[in-house]
Image (cartoon, rainbow, N blue to C red; front, side, top):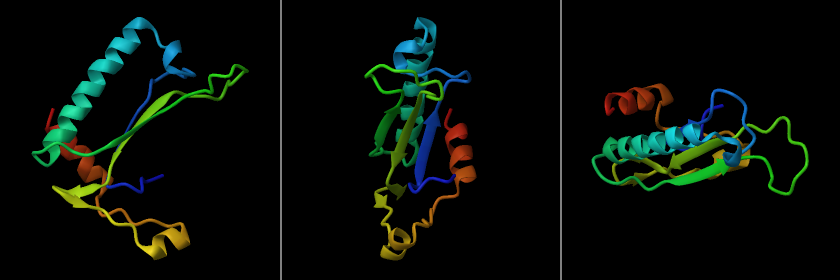
Amino acid sequence: EASTYPVAVTIAPTERVANLEALSDTARDELAAMLVDVFTRLDSLYEQPLPYMMWLMQSPSGGGEWSDAWFHIEIVSPWRAAGVPRFIAAAEVAGGEFFNPVIPEVLAEQLRALG
């Protein structure tokens, strides 16, 4: 499923882990390094710091069995170009179908090239 946001990055472990706490010390260190790398690339994308939102999606902390939970991080930005926010049209909201002005494959290639 394509993102509603022009810039979107998802980070997830390759094996199912329910939450951040369940990651090994090594995996947490690797995740921290990966986040630094991702944010450095995002801030280099338009040659200025990029506004973003970040969600940590994980199993609820109230206990219980959540065998289908898969910890992941989502990072999104509303910018479609340097200083140019993406505005969502009323027809997109009403219809539940969103147009993303950024081609995800092109964005991925740009971010890879910044590494």
